[in-house]
Structures are given as C-alpha cells and as structure tokens.
Length: 80
Length: 135
Image (cartoon, rainbow over all chains, first blue to last red; front, side, top):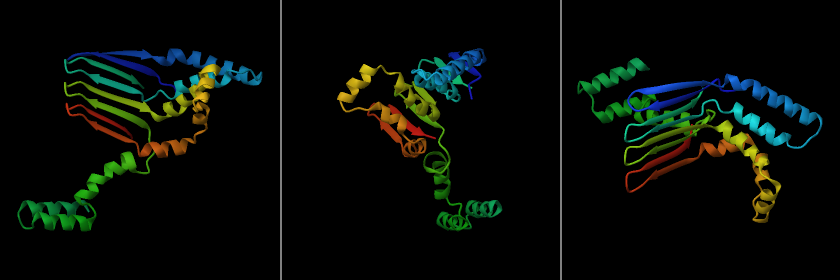
C-alpha cells in the first residue's frame, strides 16, 4: 500500500505539522508500473531496478523518524 | 483469574500473607511477575508474532533523542535495489568476493527469522545509549 501522506513536524515547544499528500505521486507510481509492464513485455533490461524502485514506494508506510534535541528542537518524519 | 489475583494482592496489602506467599500463589495462577515480564518480550522480539519494524533508538548523554522506525518490508525491497548498481561496481565487488546478487535470493521468512534475534545494545561510558531491535 502506498503511503497517503508524509507528515513533517518541526519546531520546539510548539510543533508545526506539515502534511504532504503523497496521493499526488500515485499517478507517477501507476505510470511507473505501466512502463515496467511494457519493458517486461518487450523483454527490455532495466525492468528489475525499476520494479525495485516502485516496490520501495509501497513499503514506505510506517516509516518514522523522530528527533528531539537537547536544545528543544524537534523534527518528525512520518509516512502514513 | 483477575478476581483471584486481586484477592491475593489484597491479602498482601493487608499483611495477611507475605510477599513470598503472594508470589507463590500468583505463580500457581500463572500470572506471576516473571510471566508479566516475559509477555511483552515474547510478543515483541522473541515471540511468534510477525515482525514489522526495525527500530533504532538513541539517547545521548547530552539529551538528544532519536527514534527511527523502518518497515522491514523496505529492507527486503531495498535489497533488490542492488540491481541498480552499475555492472563495473558489481564486477569490482565480485573480485573482492562480494556477490550482492545473492542478497536478493534470500528467503524473506529466513530473513525475518534472523532479524527476530537481532538486538544491539550499546551503553557508552559517557551515558549514550543505542538500541537496535525488531518488533
């Protein structure tokens, strides 16, 4: 499942959340799979790395990075 | 079971039984403290539940905290990205006895099973703590 949103949280005491919808990227992913299908049908090389790159997109859900610095700064990245 | 446990704890609180007696009784009920301690452990790291994430936690002595959660599926798929490496890089690695192509042949179940046992605990003398595990 492709992640629907990349949440970016920044700030110190007052956190600022920036939601970036990755839904906009879904057509690109879809196009990528179409290209892969064409490469596969024509037995053209380079379809394997393309497929791997496309699959990476599907595995990003749940990816999360939280950084809290001693100075109070915070950075959060969450793929949901 | 919950009621019996409460009764034992009440008796302990009232001083009717000693801590050892309470422990023995709880063990008989199968809810001793050792059971509680191992339950989340088996569910998280050593149990039969399917692993989902690789976790990296860093607590520095200066107060910085980093918490990273990487989906294991990403690692499995990332291995396939070795196919992106140029041929001459693969050739050079092959000369050194490294065959990255074998990574993609790994069985995912075997990989997950191996990662289940993964646990890295680093406690530096300066107070930095690093934990790497799967859950």
